Length: 87
Image (cartoon, rainbow, N blue to C red):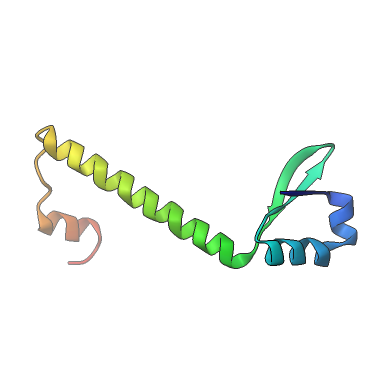
C-alpha cells in the first residue's frame, strides 16, 4: 500500500488516483504519519461494498436461524408487509 501526505496529495492528486486505479491498491493519505483517508479505485470500492452487504446478509440470516432454533415464533407475513409499508 502506498502512503502519501496530504500536502503531496494536493500537489499530485492525479498521481494518487492513477496509482489507485492502475495498481488496484489504495493510496493512504496521511498527516503527521497518521492515516486519515484513502484514494481507492471506484470499481474496487463497489466490489468491497457489495461484499460487505453480502456478509451482513449472511450474518442476519444466521441470526434468524439461531432465533428460530431457540424457539422464537415466526413473524406473520401480513405483519412483515405492514411493517415495510407494502399493504
